[in-house]
Length: 277
Image 1 (tube, rainbow, N blue to C red):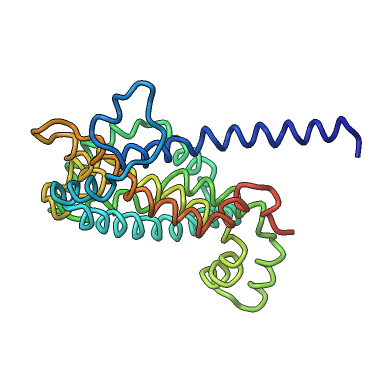
Image 2: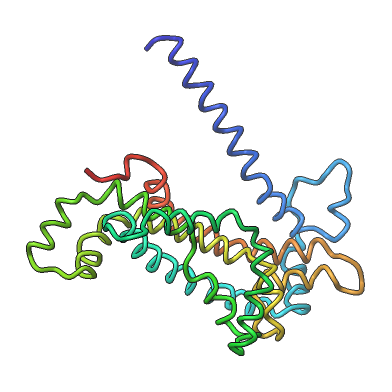
């Protein structure tokens, strides 16, 4: 093997290792502080070794907030929202990719234009609408406004246009398939990588959302995990970073698990090799 190629490969691996280190170190740091007392975060030089206070810190978090109830609330809200986004955005993307209808281009441009609108501008009209529907302080107020997204429609449209060949659709029509059956039996089996990628993005986005649930949820029994974690910063006896980090670490584990379960499809959806010929 050429020495120059060996050098390039070693340099590439070294850069990847350094990048992985800086990407993973924040998670390690969270766990380090979670296993230490509250003053560990102020140490100079910073502590980088694990302590033995994790269970005590996490027990304190359970005493101060309804942690597992909020974790379950976030899981329910994120899962239902993600399922609806995948399904509805896939249907819309299929229509924009493979059908011709009047105003198609302008409607698609209008949908993409909503991406330019800051999220904060939607808070007031959405709140008024939720109030008129009597959905304030309910899961519906958190789930329904995010059941379909402009990015999801754009993503699915781009993927379906490239991955689903017109010949397959024509074959389905010749066999007498309806529009929905073509979508369900022909398109859906081809696009799992795109669905998994969109699902992970949406699940993370809903799970990490703080502002909108804070506005519409009033009862602590309905709080999502982000609102519950925020309560740990407002305790009267000072901010206990060990307690906070222990709760954050446990709250991050479901996200890591979701990514691990769908990482294969996620990576496939981001690469050109996922497009089937």
